[in-house]
Length: 174
Image 1 (cartoon, rainbow, N blue to C red):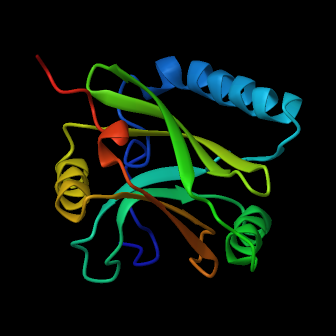
Image 2: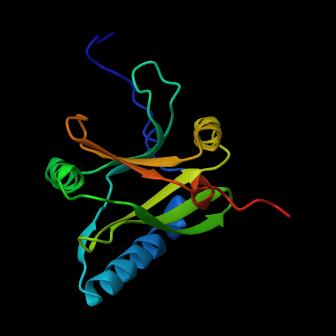
């Protein structure tokens, strides 16, 4: 047996079933939203995450909860510079949400109205996933949702806080 060989499940890193069927529409919605902000004179940063995850705050090495968006290093540094600027105030958030077969699809717009800067990103998560349930519980308990934008190595992490976590959750069933 070759000790250097590692068996990898090719489906281990695939998104949940149903995501790919709707992802192009979510990205198109994000791009249309970004275009509207640009038409209104805003500076817009579109994020195209290479990986999207949920954090429950219960992992031994990562105590953050919320959405975890992994973007290229240059984009993560750009977001970090925008967030850490002395006059930064990303204090508003709009969330466009759709749910298909338990998958929550989101277009998240983070706004700094004073500087007219918008950061726009698509996201998704499986609402039936145990970690997603833990994330929802943490956000409900804390009274806020968080979106983390980071590079792969987590050298540049920017966290956005949202006052109304319910905007990110599947709608309550009547």
